Length: 306
Image (cartoon, rainbow, N blue to C red; front, side):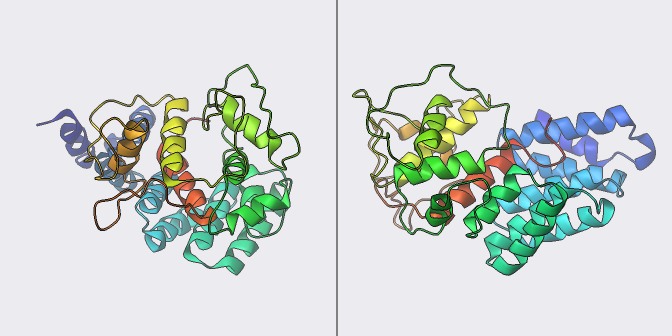
């Protein structure tokens, strides 16, 4: 039996009496590692075993909720987070999580209520501020970020602004100590966000020291951003992507690895014809949803460190 299957089988047989504090932490670390590496079925088995062993612990419900969101099972995600909230009613992170899932299901008024309640408790919470901005209530972020969130076709500058807002709670990601000189962002509203995205390696500038903030942001560039975020989080990316090359991406395409990675992890999809449509536009909602799914894999609530 493969090691991953052995681990899942072992976890499934554990009784509550045999699961000590150290055993629990080891299980959660294993589940977190599995999620970061894309082994979601293994993570689900481990979290299911932990939930049976310690039904009063909110962490397995949060992890299962994050997995459900990653799979776009929004209603199921809300059920798991709702259970976690009954177990930990004062946890603002859970309140924010439920508000975010409301946002993605289209319940914008419910999302506003939850986010305002969270902001009353923790005024500086980065995720709360980001999602309120997406909803047209700028809190700490330029109103243009909210406009970008509602756009059907964002620009490169818009994407940098969304990245800055959406990833503001992640302090542990790698960052270059050097700031590049870019000659075409001097008066752009997202100037600081663009420099931040370039420093962190999420987006690339050009050899002529330009960024192209007003240029359309394309699907292939979104794949590059996702790939770069995983790299910056220290996730080792091997050559077994688990996805076939789309028919409209050449074998020597500079972004082939990024495209195969996002397809293999289930973060982006081909069209029905097997195309990737690399030059296609990206809406603000699509960018936000994919970034949130990336975060739920890399930093599942209740499981990740920090």
